[in-house]
Image (cartoon, rainbow, N blue to C red):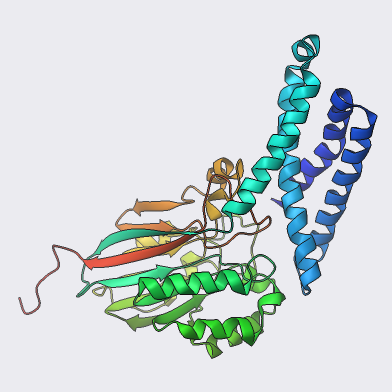
Length: 369
């Protein structure tokens, strides 16, 4: 992904100013060149620092760069389309007007997407689980991305929603934090307001920050950290996996360790006669989860592509990138994420808190028979 973004930036740094000069004149080319060079330099700086943001100012700069990058993508696409029809448009004296309109539309999309990213929705899913004795409700919240992307104010809204939903279990399924800006007791103390059992698995972003401090703060706030281990609760065997790749043959741009799901999952001893829910930050490796006969898998990581055209292209990388799927007898539920990464922007997707209602299967054997 990093190489693809750099390629887009390098191309647009040359191409877009050239097309703007053709349509609007020399001044627009100079302004566009300076702006796009700043974006390119800023993005390279972000890569070199490995997203390690420790100051509020750094967070602001990082977020602005993200929004400018998306604006640049939309503008480049727009001027490319106009380029294809430049001759007839020039003949009718419409090229300048439509180029100005393209700039306004690109800017409007970023503003709308930024506004959409401040909201979230609750989606409810009912799953019948064989062997479950009584209904269990889980609030599934991956990808909150506390730090430079999500402030305490946004966390307050999420916590208030969780309290209103009154789940039995809350699972923060990876990427709870993505910046050291969030690693303070002032932030994590807020989780103590929630009365339900709270569990926390690691995502890839937990390894881009002070991991030990993040997990210690979570445990102090009452979150039970599940790093490739199982607990029994509410009649369920709940497995939380460390973030890992699916197997040794598949690639992962966010690889943070040498663990593989198909090797680690069989090491966790469980009772096959009892219902099991598995939480893993990424939907990769679901075929191995199904092979183990696990009833439900919860995942996030993909953000549903987050921003168009990513919402379309994400399917090339993740065949299961949002929604509900049945893989053999395993129900896979992939969240679009409760927060955002990169630009604070949503277009073609939405921030999502999943309320998962597990209910006994109608064919559940009656006790004593």
